Amino acid sequence: FGFVVAPRWSIVRAGDGAFAYFDGYDISQSVWSIGPQVFLNKKVYVRLGIGVATKSVDLDSSYDDYSYNVSTHSGMGWTAAIGVEFMQSYHVALGLEAAATYGHYQEIDLVTGSRDDGTIGINFMLNLF
Image (cartoon, rainbow, N blue to C red; front, side, top):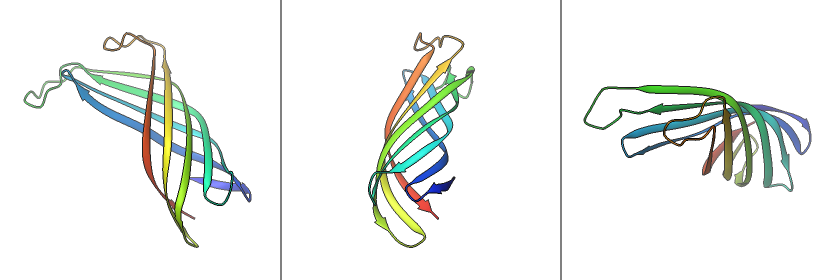
């Protein structure tokens, strides 16, 4: 969600996240951020954001077992992305975006042994305006 402040500038409220399952652990991270999105030309843009990060780790997860031992952490989050809108019409645009998120937490995660976690991904974007 966002609003335009100038022809190539807007303020965007975004949610980015990732989920992974490995070695019996479910780990997810979400970053809810707000920040500027700047179009470098008619199709290419850069987006930055700062906000809240949440991380959830399920230590006893498996596909055959329904017991859960979930640890949840909250902290500061940052987002950076670069994208291209490959199809644009009057009220809709489709695009691809390479995004990176970073979360810093107060407590050390027992799985990763760190207070910091990040993700990198490719997102399919549907923009309505």
